[in-house]
Each structure stands twice: as C-alpha cells, then as structure tokens.
Length: 364
Image (cartoon, rainbow, N blue to C red; front, side, top):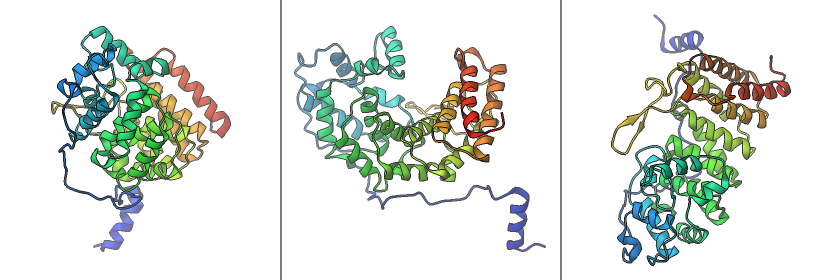
C-alpha cells in the first residue's frame, strides 16, 4: 500500500504535473470590500430623468437633445446612474445596450434596418462610423469629470463597459484612463468576469494607453488556472490583441494561453458554432437564459497568430499551439457551415502562419 507521498509521486509520473490547482488571485493591494450599495445620491429632477434610456437614445440620435433641454452635465449624471444602480449578470456587452443611451445602435433601436447597420458599424474597424454612433465630445468630457470622483460607486464590470464606449468612440481622456487603471490595481481585478478582464486591456490598447502595472496584474489574473479554464475564444482574442499592441511581455501568460487555446480547439467540432458547455460554461442573459459561448472562427486564429508573431513568442509551447490551430483550420474548412466562414479566411491564416514560421524557424 503506497503512502500519501508515494501516491503523489506516482500520480505525477503517470499524468504529469499539469493538474488544476488553486492559486490565490494577484492583487496590487487589498480591495476594500463593502456591502453592495445601489442607492443613488443623484438629485433625479429635470428633463433628462423623465425619459427611459431608449427614449433618450432616440432623442440624442436625432440631434434633439438641446430642444428637450438636456445638458451634458445632466446626461453624464444619468449615464453614471444607469451604470451604478445595478449589479452585472450577463458577462458580456449585451445587457448594457439597454442602459447605454449614448450609443445610438444596438438592440434598443426601433428601426430594424438601422439596428442592423449600426450594430455592424459598432463592431467594425471603421473609426469614423463608430464615432458617429456615440454622443458628442461634450458629453464624454462631462462624464470624465464626474467619473473620476466616483469610481468606487460603479462595479468594475460596469465600469469596464463604460470605458468601452470611450474606446469604441475613439475618445481619449488620459486623466480618466489613469484613474481607472489605478483604481483597478487596488485589488479589484479579480472581481472582473472573463469578458471584462479581456475587454479592459483591449480598451487601453485601442486607445493606445499604457499602464504597465495594470497589464501585469491582468496577466497574472488571466493565467491563474481556474481563470484560464473559464476563458472563451473571444477573451483569448481580445487579450492577445491588447498585449501584442502594447508590446507587454509576460512569458507565463503566453505559456498559459498556449495550453488554454488548444483545450478549446481540440475539444470542439467546427461543424457547430457554439462551444460545448461541458468544456466551457455558458453566458447568462438578462432573462436568465443561457447561451453557449461562440466557438473559434478561422479569422480569430489569424488574429491570435499575428499577435504571437508581433510579440516574437517562440518555443515548443507556441509551436504546439500553432499546430493545434492549423489542425482546427483544416477541420473547419471541411466541416464548418458558411455562417462560420469568411471569404479567404483559411488563406489568410496560412499566410500569417507563414510569416510566423519564416521568422521563428518553425518546422513548415
């Protein structure tokens, strides 16, 4: 009969050291956790408070804010109220569209054609189109002045998506970005969900804002074993984009991603657009329903390969990840439905993989 120490050695010999373990979240300092307080100190009087977010969005989109007596300062107070007065649930942008009246697209738009085109523009790389879908600079300036004085009143996930509107609109306010990053570094990063964790580093990279401590603490949270297993394809993609654009190197993060990405790829049949819920937990929507996370698309793997290339990441772990991605692309070409594909996606992936292999000396 083997003793505990001998059993432990035998287990490592048989299965290797890569087992799930608990690792304490990395925090810059201990966050002051207090009971949830959703009360508001805003004096809710005036024309801005007489309308729903949907109605505010319609009025502002048509350029009638002045006609209704809306001031930038009062709109900023209403915006903060909308994001301070509830606790996040959905783990993605979708629920925020119903409160984010300063974004003029999305699910609250009444005209179907307008909704379709606006949503596509919102998620596109067309900076000019994205800027037109948001409130004017005066509104964002008022929000910055107010937000900097009350960051602790907004849940970190909600705050992430508030800053996301700045990033998508291309509005750069360094005072706010520094304040948000410093605030999160006080111990709040582990309270973020998987999407907000990847989204906030993406926000900073999109606005070309650098905060090394924030990126380092985010990396430490991302490669924590339990967190790593929770990441969805989009989270891997957004994080890789952010760290490569900011040229922030963290070897443990890249090694962890080289394990986490193949885990999703190798356990997924690319015939299906959603990941298996036995491999990755679902998103919870506003009505309580669950939606499985989107599976990897070939385009996402091209983006990730480019990020590895720009970071000059090398080594056996990266090469194994590349092989897993290449095999997934092959299976996707054979099995994925047209809605999961884009014109030239496989060729673009091979082209990007060739760039990486050419410089890294990877076996072609």
